[in-house]
Amino acid sequence: MNKDQVNGKLQDIGGKIQEEAGKLVGSTEQQAKGLENQLEGKTQEKIGDLKEAIKDATN
Image 1: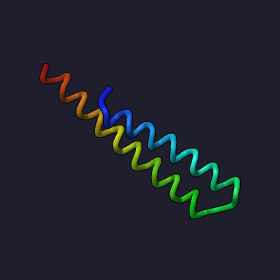
Image 2: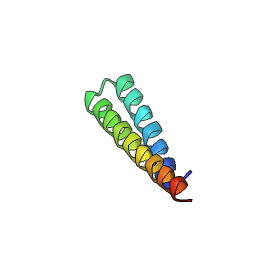
Image 3: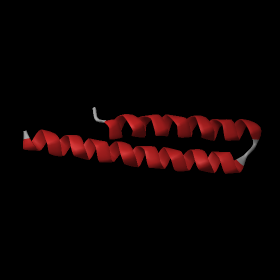
Image 4: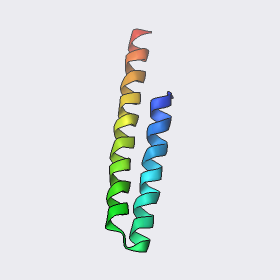
């Protein structure tokens, strides 16, 4: 695992928590921010996956 994969996973999890917290307090703004963080986290995680695949292919 590389840092992009780890950081992406952490941001995804944080976004899920933020989304759920927004639901609990009735804040659509927090829900939207949580979803945005999840998307950013998943994107970063996929970038990390791609880097790993390239690294593995070149070794």
